[in-house]
Length: 121
Image (cartoon, rainbow, N blue to C red):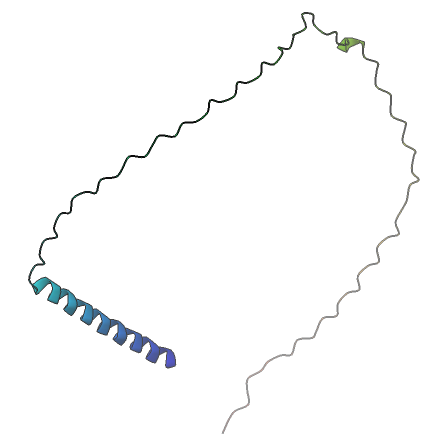
């Protein structure tokens, strides 16, 4: 109930603000036009002196690397030695598990026959 009262109060406040705003807008529309704004001259900006920067230092010359003219010798891939063989795995003894016990049977609940209810007075 309290939330309904709060909602209604919010709607009333919103409507009261909107009516004030619409009355103010109507008043502005019906008022006489404002006088035109005079055009002001643009101010002159004094020119700033151009800064002079010192020249950049020259980069030192680095010695150029010399490239080898012959190809390096790599080993022949077909002459690689064979991979060593893995040692054989030891044999594990056979382990046999005992048989699982059988589940006991769940006794059934005998059903109770439903007859007709006794006659009422």
